[in-house]
Length: 123
Image (tube, rainbow, N blue to C red; front, side, top):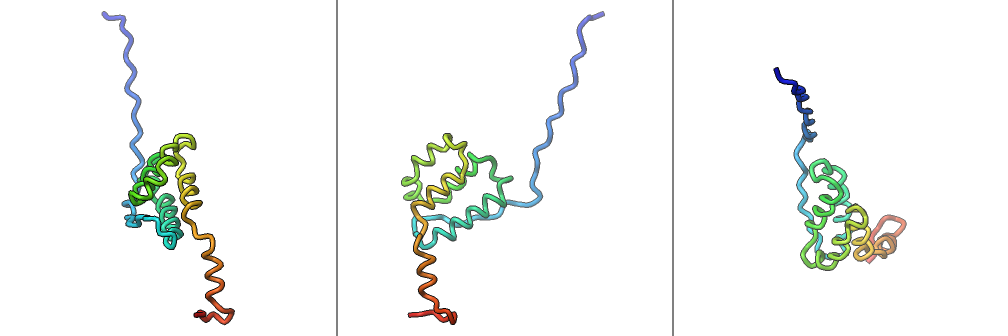
């Protein structure tokens, strides 16, 4: 007879959470055009919020966001992207950096000037 202890049964590994839908497509590549930055910014935030289960953690979200930038823009923000570990790869920091560079601070002023109180566009 053996005095060996019985080995405990293996601990079951929980199945990964499978999202109940497919990831949404995202075809917006930001190429540095300041006139479309706001729409790209809104779209990438919506994408990260709605598909974070598909994309993954902050590091993967930052990588995904970097892939939506043209090569010219990637080169411009490379140091900020590489330093992602300093902020736990939180994509909000890369978005904030891009916003400082590309947001159109005068867009709201131009919109107010181009419309009269009657709602008619001025020349």
